[in-house]
Image (tube, rainbow, N blue to C red; front, top):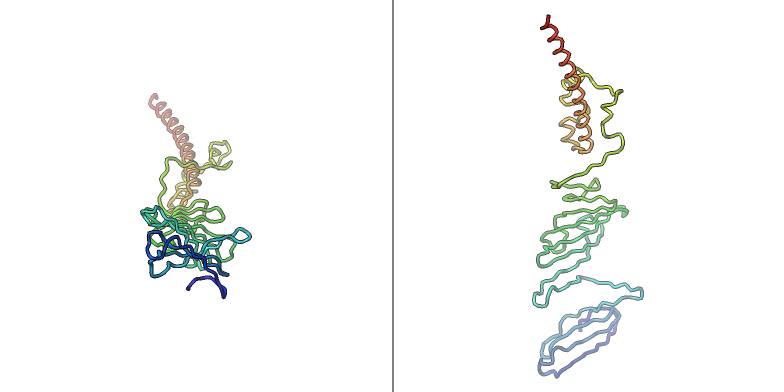
Length: 263
């Protein structure tokens, strides 16, 4: 009778609410019991064959429920499009077994989460993807969560607590500084300020300011905003000291010129 399951024998329980010569009494229902579980199918009395067998979910003695295939949730009875949850094998992504949670249906565009462990099985990644592939495997990955707490947007390999492969738009960004990083020490009496001649020689040799990375270094390694802002603040404070010193010299020169004029 084509029932799935296991074992040599099985038992059927058939419920026929109406006569078998017309369909006004709705469908007949049938249960099959075998070693593989309990299975169900139905048909109208005048149908030439039964529907396909479906397995009834049951928990074991520990409360676990096993499901092979898809768990589908209908949106409405009138609109049979499904939002389905898939738990499958993500080996196409990593070469390692993984769990996949995929949402599909009207307006959702086959979005989903995919958990991928690494080869040592002590760390993994959770991917959030959107796209047109129903199983979620082939869709572009938008967000990555790593077990070490790193989060990536537009990248599968975040190397910081937040790694963004693209532009960031924010109203305000706050960068905290550790003790001693803010360069107010430039104004201390014992601070050794380079002479302008020393700065000039350095610029001629390196084509950039002291303690400021070169263009090639920035292109290769990127720019650390917190560190760069502190270095730029330091240069502004040093420039202020140079301007104060130059102002003193200008005043001295003006004074000397006035004395010469009086003679």
